[in-house]
Amino acid sequence: MKRSLLAAGILACVLSVTASSSRPALAQQSKVGDWTIEKRAQDTHCNASRGYKDKDDENRDYVIVITYSEQAIVIVMIYDGWEWDKAGEILRADVGTDDADIMKKAKWEVMDKTTVRGIFAYDQSIMDRLAKAKRLTLDFEDDDDDIIEMQIPRAGEALAALKFCEENRK
Image (cartoon, rainbow, N blue to C red; front, side, top):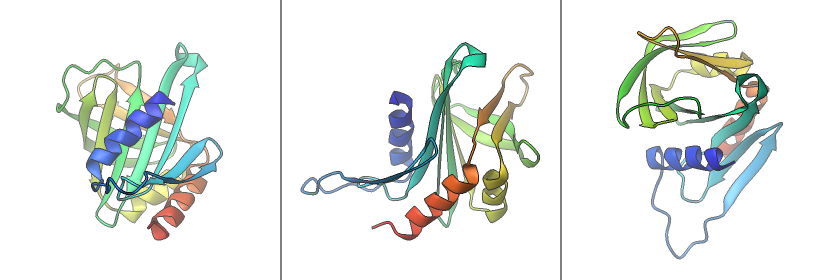
């Protein structure tokens, strides 16, 4: 859960407005399976987040956060098995789902030693591919060992709830 909050905080940096100190920071929140869909008072946009432990990978933590606007899709991935050297470093990775390639050599920014963030121009076909996926894969360029596969079950339902949240955010 700490990682979910960290990811949400990172997103707040990307898509936030300063909340008035006189207003309470209340969140609009719903659940879709183990996804959390929320619009926090300090955020401009809603986000969908999912965190889990993978018993097949030394019980490591995985977190994914997805948000979007008419201009951009933002995906934050946190994996406690990563040990990136420096924040701000730009990595390139092929992005795919279980049955489709989404992007070749997409740009990902290292946020901290376990977190990367991709910011992409909004494209409905990306959202459609994510909605049909059960997993999202990043295959980092120039590193055969650095491939991550995040499980995103019920992504279609989560993205539908995210869209509803976006259309009804205040």
